[in-house]
Length: 133
Image 1: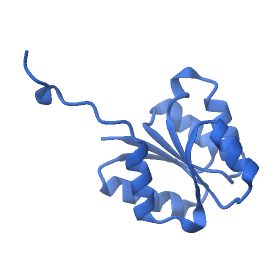
Image 2 (image 1 turned 120 degrees about the horizontal axis):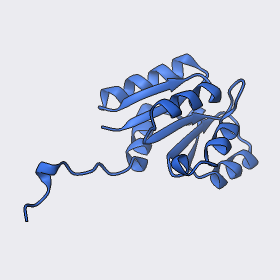
Image 3 (image 1 turned 60 degrees about the vertical axis):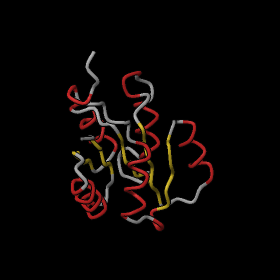
Image 4 (image 1 turned 135 degrees about the vertical axis):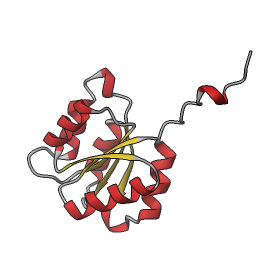
């Protein structure tokens, strides 16, 4: 079971993604901006972050630049989604280790699930599944 942090200022988007991911067996935490996202991140380290770029208080790139300074959060997979078609935004996201930068206009539940599964770390085998010596 994977933990996914969803940071988006639009409640309808945030809640829809959370429900979809929960139906697939994931645990979700949500935040309405980068500042709240940092609080959630400190409470429970996620396996993956779904991050909106355009948010009040702390936007997605600012949030990401801040957390990447800490080794414990440097390798968390991040999928960013945005309505901004700004090439420099996408390039900055890539330098901060964003796995995918998705356009909100082209966003579907099926596509979200494909990317989530692609970038989640492989589950650790249960002790019962390991071969006996």
